[in-house]
Length: 260
Image (cartoon, rainbow, N blue to C red; front, side):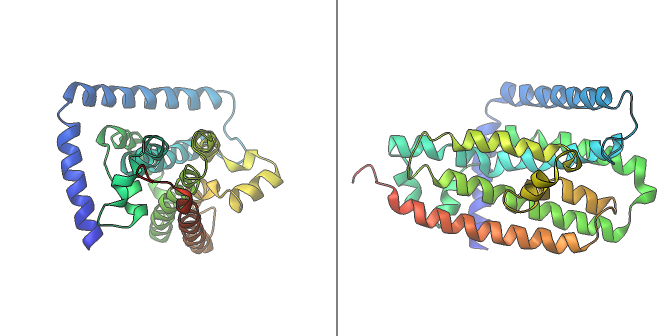
C-alpha cells in the first residue's frame, strides 16, 4: 500500500507537469492517430492478396498489434522512459538522488515519473482490441478472455523485467547500446511468431520470451492456445522478474556515486 500511495502521488505531480504543455500533449494525440492509421494501412496491404499468413487472418493481426501497442505504450509511460534515463543519470552522477528515495532502488529508478504523453498512445492498442471484440465476439469465451487478461498482465511484468535487466548494465558500462538493441528486438513481439523458424520460436518462448508479450495473450484470447499457457505466462513472468532483480542487485554494486 505504501508503494501504491507513493506512485499515485508521483502520477498526480507528473500529470500536472505534462498538462502544463497542452500543445505538446495534443500533438502526441495526433501522432497516435497517425501511427494507428499507418499500422492499419500496412496490415491491409499485407493481406491484400491473401486471407491468412501462417495461420493468422487479418483480424488476428489487428488483435496482435493491439495487445502489443497496449503493452508497449503503457510501459513507456509508466517505467520505460525512466529506465532509459538511467544511463544519463549515471553519467551525470544524478543517480545518487534516486538512491535517497524512501523506496527500494528498483522502484525509485523505474517509477520516478509518469509520462502521460507516451502512455496516451496505448489508446491505439485499445482501439484495435475493441475492433476485434466487436467483430469476433461470437467466437470468444469467458475463460479465454479472463486467461488473456491474466496473460497481458504477465506480459507487462516480462516487458518490465527485460528492460530492467538491460538497464542494469549501465552501472557496469554506460553507453553500451544494449537498450537500443533491446528496443529493436522487442519489435518482433508485434509479428506472428509462426512465420519464424523452429529455433527462433524456441528462443522467443524461452531464452528471450517476447512471445509472451503479445502472441501468447492473443492466442489464449482466441482459444488457439490452451489455458495451460496462462500458467506458463505467469511462471515466465515470475522467473523473468526474479532474474532481472538479481542482475540489478549485482550490477548496482559497480555504481560509483558522484561524491565517491
